[in-house]
Length: 484
Ligand code: GLN
Image (cartoon, rainbow, N blue to C red; front, side, top):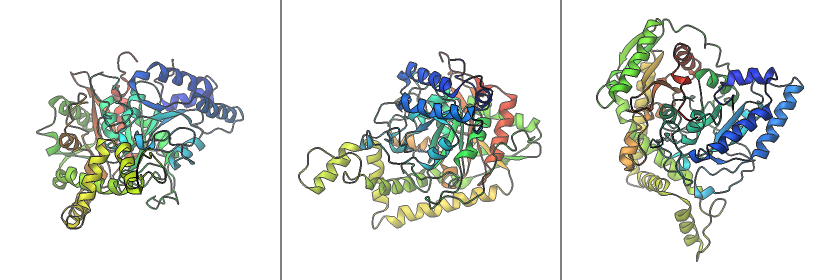
């Protein structure tokens, strides 16, 4: 299929000029999804529903009523509920669940005329960093059969990297867009917490969960982001801000910008080749006239313990709704209501959600609440303050996404080592900051290397501008894994 790795911008142009129809595009991607089924990136594909949406988009285009995204295919992480596709959060608990409504983000992108290709695999309830926790099997990394695609939006990242969709949604609670983007050589955008609606996003940790995008470039993220954010009166943490055009600053020079680099993140523990690739990107920004300044983020070191207290506490509360009564899995055999709930939860949840429910219940319990949960909330505030103070001196922060490239399947089987690997992504999540991850090199092990850009609340346009400047000058984002 000749359109497989084409940008959203170019697909939109071809659709408007009638060089290709939405139905042809959808068919092409559906064929590729089928051909690369072994990646296990998709959990639910329903060609008849996709083609219905594509036909509707073609009609709008023919009538001259179509917006720029009409007919452009997209796929959604299986954390977003959808009316026409099953919504499972990659859990047995929600196997085959059909939602009576679309998540706000899904509804908005549908209203923009985008055509849904199906639902994407992920870690169960978005808990994980390698997509090894899905109840429906792991997802392959198109770059290397032994490497994880990253998580929890692993299906999302693999789908873009393999050319199975030009752009996809993901969710980022503690790094789940940025880390898989980095592990698969694609561009990921996590907006400011509260900017995209959380309505219809199956909840993991409500004070952190943020919808976002993964695509081939920052420009493509900018084109679609405008249609996915906006105030939602049905989400109490939705930010009431006027819509903005995220492409407006893309072509502006980055001259004069101040980019902070947390020096301690660039030292011990960071893979030498990852460091060299990030340094090359920093040199590029310097040559473009940006000022690179050293910063320190001493509180951010506490991000991992704080995140795993807060996220597990919220997860234990959110997952209590799966009791076998209202929706989700119900055990076939039980004696009374208590055994029904216990057995349903035991059968429905995998090991990682169970672990987090136990941690969360513990830190919220009487006698431990002050020592763990309350203390974590206080430190969370200090981490956020440290970022806000830093952003008075710098326009953005550039740093690694991860200490290395994608790791091998099974290498992070110990939960503590898996949690520790989130050290560069969770601090920004705790502060609700927007972030971009984009490719900046390929390691001698053949796996992509990512660079992370972080900004103050609501500076998405500036982060996309910085990322676009790099992508205009380099072709890392255009590299493709062999065999795709
Ligand atoms: N890896 C982190 C976790 O396991 C982040 C997950 C996420 O952002 N959804 O919680």
